[in-house]
Length: 444
Ligand code: AMP
Image 1 (cartoon, helix red, strand yellow):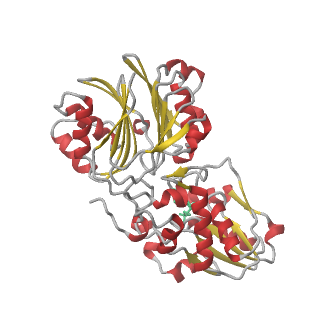
Image 2: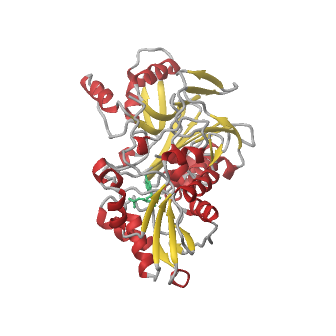
Image 3: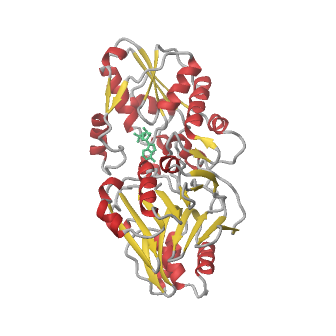
């Protein structure tokens, strides 16, 4: 998951990177960091916590320079060490570099073992560290050639920003699984970000998406150059649209909110129900619930209140705390719900924890019937390309039939969007990455 940002040729580089990361906080809340480049020196500040917690005024006195890369790290159970915070900085034979990475390398263990066999020492569990080692160990003369050689060795979904003292390299893997876009800054420089919501905050003007298999090179005093290093086989991640990206972002030409509305509308055609009210699970189900209500011709209400001071339910690694957190986060408006037949819409069902709690909550609030609808297909496979989904054992749809799940979450009925319905909502012009739903692990 995670967010990356890059700023090139701006006297406000670190501030702009900071605002970009702030806008993309939803992509990762565990750790954050920025490296700037000032003449011959790179400066890095990173730490665990939110963007507003890690950077203060003093940080910007340190982060001098007109170039910056930044990163928000998403938390997954088990490896929340500060050593896993990015950017990853290294001094090597050609000087200093700093790397940020969004995605997942599928051959990271093989590459790491090979590097360890050759004497490399690792400080973290991040695949990003493999990249630093591969660059440092390459015998090629220029950094660009070393990066090219590194790209040949790694497989998977990756967006990489690599900053040296005078250049910034921006790389999107040939499948373009994770989003990455480029914008022009009001004062003339460039900005790169995982999501376009970062541009909107700072008034940067979107130019285009970075192409699958493209490397952009930003060098002082020159226009950016583009190299197509890999044959594009574009597989944008459907889950970015379903859940992960911010609704105001435009990913590869499509506004996320509009795709979610469409998912809801198509869900209403595929899985209708006879109800008095449609409610969303806030905030993840809001847009698709609106679409669902419109599709059914039934009123939509924000019948569940969300406490915004509690983080996402996945942040805590243990099941016990996850259950408690759902209750801390969501609370029903009884006056709206009592005696009504309700359709409750969420974007996805992963372990089934949220659905279970919410159905109970609505029934306790006096709902006559509760019909659970999910604006995505059943998640039957873990994503290996950068979305944090649990293993097969924990995925409820990988282990239970529809009827069993319906019983488990105690709903009166349960319905999912079909894979065809999802593709129709996104537009049939692309070959989306649907691994969580169809198990087609197209990379290796
Ligand atoms: P669960 O409660 O385990 O069924 O998870 C479903 C809830 O988690 C939904 O409300 C989703 O919005 C949210 N969700 C789905 N995928 C993810 C993810 N990869 N990370 C964090 N939250 C997620």
